[in-house]
Length: 265
Ligand SMILES: NC(=O)c1ccc[n+]([C@@H]2O[C@H](COP(=O)([O-])OP(=O)(O)OC[C@H]3O[C@@H](n4cnc5c(N)ncnc54)[C@H](OP(=O)(O)O)[C@@H]3O)[C@@H](O)[C@H]2O)c1
Image 1 (cartoon, rainbow, N blue to C red):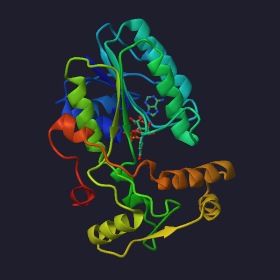
Image 2: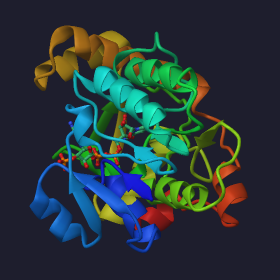
Image 3: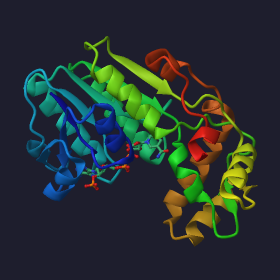
């Protein structure tokens, strides 16, 4: 059985569709399961004992980030190993380590734990999702960031789901990290131009120094330390670490990942 956590999320919903509903979703409330229209169990990653697993299951372990994310995900991985699951697949982030900033570091810590768990593993390591881009545009048509001219190969989260479905329905392969990107890596000025075309109103990218971006984020309600770390993280992304594209999606799916233009329609 393929057990899908985070089933109501962006990737999770697309994954259930890709699997044609042949899956067991883990949801926090029964009405979410009814809405998904596949087999489901009610469970919460905060309570790892509620994630029912049997020998031979393949577990897709994914959720939003919250302060208890590392502890909860590690505990579920331990339960999966003890239950004799055939594979645990997680969604991490490209290039992270346990000492990366903010959520990137959380993912790095979970990745380390998974690799040491003894359970067969696959880590999907995407860059940023196209799904978030339009939401970053403010009322005045601005996107703020500290990426400079750094390129980012944003990916459509549905392509992550398609890769997950393809891998989960093949025999379990060797343990591996799959770095997933879109087909090209535009700058944020180029992304603003694509958004301008798609939204029918002018969008421009406003590049800020790390200090300016931290102040901007704080003004929008983010606590000081997190604002500083996020600003720094954007500038780190801008250094080119997400600037190259990979052929992983095409290699696995036999088709190109969706472009930003296709995504925006
Ligand atoms: N956004 C990006 O650009 C980006 C880039 C790289 C990696 N990622 C990673 O992708 C992951 C998020 O994937 P996504 O966008 O598909 O998720 P999402 O749309 O944010 O959905 C989050 C899912 O997590 C579930 N969830 C949250 N807390 C839970 C808990 N305690 N127990 C069980 N389920 C819980 C939610 O359930 P409810 O419906 O019950 O709330 C929901 O199904 C994160 O780990 C993120 O760091 C994101």
